Image (cartoon, rainbow, N blue to C red):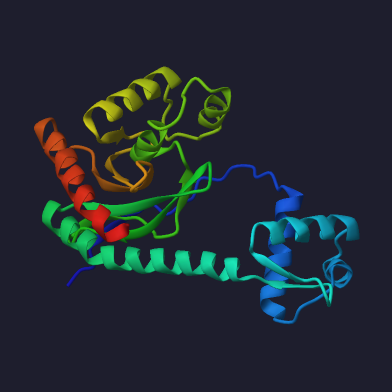
Length: 263
């Protein structure tokens, strides 16, 4: 039996990254304390990580205030705190919930005969595919889990943008840095965002990838933020007019049900 034809959309969008040194040093310190397991003095941590002693002390003091590092005033030593363990536990729990959502994504992909992806917002400017289910058809589109994109990109990006001030200069700067598959004026993008906010689902018609149509709906957290989106990825022409509207409405209904799984 011939292998199915697969279109692989796994190329990540690359952009220049700015490293914030204090943040990087804080993460190195947390990693060092977690891996070592033995309480250490600030001066010893600074020497081993080649961090300025004064800078290291200030970072440790901040991490103590944030409850992710513990400080023993008698021994003057620092260790990984209970708050860090709780933070990791929250991520593990969310990862388990994403795994519970996987069969639901697979069922939806089979029912709608499209590729379904679950996107999660990561930080202030990135989104990542945390789960993906390809349509069980001979010709399909594969989207790799772990793929990261600028937060404003694609159908999902238009949904995340509904919770931003598009007149903000930093938002415009982020938009201008995106490399779209075909030219997309900011004014047209803004209209797409406004339409997405009105009807509850968004479309990217060939701007993320030429020949590909993506439709996405939001998954709201209990606080009303869009933390996840579910996107249907299909070939252009596979759905038209009312078919696209029906797909958007189906995604909204699915996302409402998915809220009880992810939160």
